[in-house]
Image 1 (tube, rainbow, N blue to C red):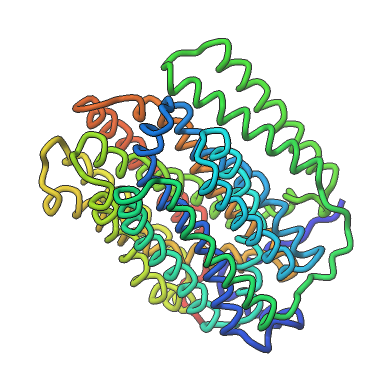
Image 2 (cartoon, helix red, strand yellow):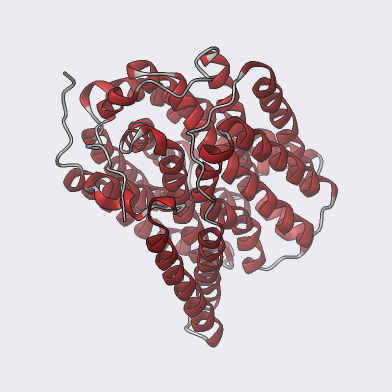
Length: 477
């Protein structure tokens, strides 16, 4: 069985593979704009929905478990199919898959907007997740191939910053829409972005493939989806009831069984697997993905619970809740382009160690948030510190992941790391059912307990970076 050899996990390792496949070199700025527009769909969608969750729950008379699945119906296919989304781009063309995913995301958003029922909303959210699984890895792979060296770091930083800025505006706009119209209208915001990204792709971006002619790993995709779904369902049942029931055990056994079967399929498929196990042959690749799981799991839980808490028990309107969390993505938006360039010069180990530790500190600051607490002295400092920590980590993490494997596997590596981050979100949301079911002062108590777990996960991510990336060269030649 042959395995690809990971790079030394140093962003500078990409210099040996800076020559991208022919195609997208002619209009690199167009590739950047298209990638930003397409990937912003996912960033904006997540921000909008979290602000709208209380209104959705009240309007549809939904339980806490149903609200969890409004969120996880998106994260489940996104986490499971991101692995195959990059491989499909390598096989059939990255632009083609990006356009298909963007179109599907837009159509699913229309379903959520036009059919405001719980069943249609969950189906539409699943469609958005499938679309995101196609567009996200291929947008980043196209971007990675259009730029080289420090320009690549700046482009990735711009990509991350634009998504963060979109995520900053979305909660405010979404909150205002929910207050003045109705929650289904928030999904209309995603349609123009879809159309714009597809238009630029059709007119200004050439097709790029890796020359991969191998068959697609559909059995791996199916078993991964069922396995992750079983685990998420088991955790949802457990978090809602707080006890080990027959449903918890049954769903957990099914999930673990299918994940074990998935690993067996991937081992047999070798380099042709959608998640080639050879990718994990390098210490840095393992460390980067474990860091991603821990950090984005903690962040996903915070961004789910905090707006919900402010609206349900903090007395905030939807618009004010959106405005309250706006500093977080704005700080990431301002800091990511700077950190992208810095990481190209000094390496990723230090920012990936310090960033998660700062995030952990910000989460602990959130313990001061309680009933009637002042926004400026309690909520804002916590959000700001978490934002600073993420600004230190986002662009260096993205650059390091893309540089950790051979150029021909950038789509697969991108899909893998994005899948890991969404799996972290999936698990975090599944564990939050007990908190979502609380009201009044009890909701603050549950929030504080959750913050401790989030801070521990973020701090562990920093430790993983320091020891797992110990062979990373710090200085640039």
